[in-house]
Image 1: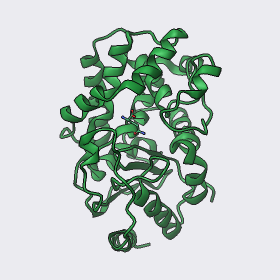
Image 2: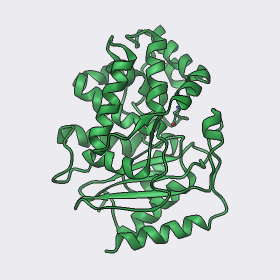
Image 3: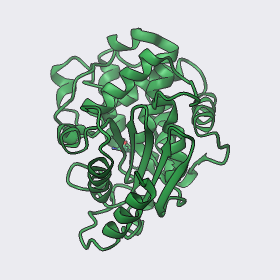
Image 4: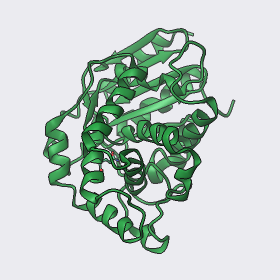
Length: 303
Ligand SMILES: NC(=O)CC[C@H](N)C(=O)O
């Protein structure tokens, strides 16, 4: 199979599409990004990395960071984490507060904002946010085998300045006894993790620890890897997770920066980026491109 050819075809198709979705508007740093951009990178089990389009342009990974913090938190806490956050799809928007009210401050899953705040609270564990963020960035660098990736300070500052809703989620959970650190510390750490900037190439490389292929970075146990993938499949695209599973058939995690990390177990780690979003807050072209890639390669967990 000529994967490079498939990527090039997808890149050409994407460039010609007039409907590119709308970039996130809640912070100016994301609102100003040119929606014409599209990048795709595939890290294959044989070690090759194939790309098309803007695969070397850095973007804000936003909620894709929740995969890395979950892996870290499970390493720290083990299954104790599940007393503080659930494992069910929410069926609501990523930043919804609705279920927290009726479900006693226990978020549905680690990939909606409320759940990710609990995960971040776990890895913070009484330490200084700087220390925790350094550990997180180190984890992502080790996964990508690339030290040249950083937190974008402007994005982090802006997340903080516009972070009322996330702060509200954290305060609400604190009221239910589900925050261990001061809310401003947990939120500050969360805002910075969302501001990690990476290219598609770096993100595809960073996802290899979830690929389950020989010679890939072993940052989590195989059992834990399967669980992270299961959550990506069921909850990685918020209330569009079912649709993504239906169309693509692979576990993925999206972010409002327009990036999606997708894993084809045993075969590839894939990162796609296009800043325009669909109504669910997932990359519009990224989702379409992933559907095309899965169809053309035949990669699916349902084989
Ligand atoms: N879906 C996302 O990528 C959300 C991340 C964003 N920083 C927020 O907290 O609202």
